[in-house]
Image 1 (tube, each protein chain N blue to C red):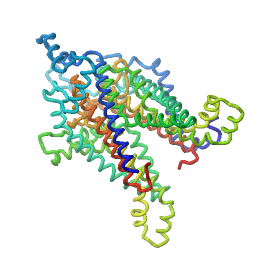
Image 2 (cartoon, rainbow over the protein chains, first blue to last red):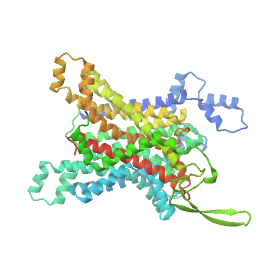
Image 3 (cartoon, rainbow over the protein chains, first blue to last red):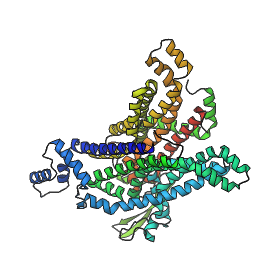
Amino acid sequence: MKKGYIAERLLYTLIIAWGVMTATFVILRIGPGSPADRYIANLGAGHNVTQVTAAIETRYGLDKPLYEQYFEYMGSLLRGDWGWSFSTSMPVIELIKTHWVYSFQLILLSSIFAIVLGILIGIYSAVRKGTKADYIATFFSFIGISTPNFWLGIMLILIFSVRLGWFQTYYDTGLSTFSLANLKALVLPVVTLGTGMVAGYSRYVRSSMLENLRRDFVRTARAKGLPEHVVIVKHVFRNALLPVVTIFMWDMSAIVFGGAYLTEVIFGIPGLGRISFNAIFADDYAVVVAVTLIGAFVTLLFNLVTDIAYTQLDPRIKYD
Amino acid sequence: MIIEKHHREKIKKNKPAVLGLLFIILLFVTAILGPFLTRDPNEINFNDKNLPPVGFSIEQSMYNIKTQELEVTERKGSWEHPLGTDDRGRDMLAMLVSGARVSLEVGFLATGIAILIGTFIGVVSAYFGGWLDNALMRFTDVIMTFPFFLLLVLIVYMYGPNMVFVILAIGLTGWTGAARLVRSEVLSLRTLDFVTASKALGASDPHIILRHLVPNTMSSIIVIATLSIPGVILAEAALSFIGLGDPALVSWGKVLNAGQDSLVTTWWVAVEPGMILFLTVLAFNFLGDGLRDALDPKSE
């Protein structure tokens, strides 16, 4: 029963989302120093500390019992009141509204790059299994998987930006998101974030293709005289795609979010990773918490979509 | 016992795996003995700052107050600092050796904890089955979906960076893959004749688990452990890179971050730690892949 399965996954996701919010509350309240201390530490001299502390404690209800604070915390999260970012002097939710699009753009372009290239390389090395080209692809996929993407990014900057001067890497928020200058500034970041994924996908596509190449229906298709490219694309590739879709979705949560964070930091792309990184150094804790929560929620959402997509894509799978 | 002669023969034929193993051994020896042979990685010496590695030279322009002219001098790397120095004159070699220790410690300890927990949960789940299996697997599902790494960043940020904490956090949450793998192996093992025979002879549950089931899943455990270590090493390097590493330790990620700021002049400060990190991860991946090919008859 598919509906029951989806409902179960949905329930799981909601429970874990609640768990994540509760965990952040516990981390924040048990952590050393009250939130008020962190605000004050960044206020600088010339403020009446006791007065400010009292004001903040009333404003955020820190003087109330813990369980009341907990309900208020959860309530304000749900209402979209995610606190105040003092390093940028605006509500955290506004900061996120302006910056999420840059992260989204980077992840979107990198994913397209990785999927297209990964699939092409994967098909090619499966069809040419055991040839030199296949070995070269295998070798480079090992290199790609093993290269720390933050180091790759720095090396790309060193070679293509500092030495050769081919790409400037300044992302200009004044220009439109998809302006030519900004797209050009995204070339190196996309390669940085995409390389590991290309390496991974090409391996999955290859092994998944090889598995399907051995199947009876492929022999039948060839026996009835279909041209080889039709066999490869229609019979083998279509069937090889399913595990790749799953891996891609899993990746979105695991590699992409960590990788996107670091890529933004290195290239100064003003996405959520970058603002969180800046916030860590400015000790602007509300922003750090907010980006953590958003990352967690998006991860959960992707896992949910993966589970549901899986039931829709493969008619053989039935959940009771 | 686990890696038998024919396995060894097969691994020996796999050149990348052999190279990987040699590199890892070398890294281990360096991490253990290196700190006694190199300089103090924290020793600051401004006279020797920005020295390139041996075989390289950079042009450095300095303003001479007496002649009021910009003087261009050439600086060459020397064997005193074979891998060069950073902007405070700290020895790169010494810093990389110190970083090797940090990376290996985190990689092995965190993976060790994860494998122990994963094996325990996997075996218990499969062996006893029933409601216990159901509950443990649900629990594994939840842990798997829970975005721990993001919370880890938050915790490290709030409580201050601390290596023990990072090791525990990664170890206590990274066991889910091992648990599922061990469970699936034990599920097929426990129906085999030798287990039934052992039971018939009156062997206790702990005896069957420790003497029969765990040793027979060892090869899979070794493979998954070898392939998990690079991920852990990368995670630690990433944390150090964004400034959440243990401030008392010199790690590769931290050096790399410092090198990023002076890319135009002292490129080696960023190139070297990243290169060694890359080689380490590559070595573990090669070895893990070779072990899987050798130990798992099903893999291709």
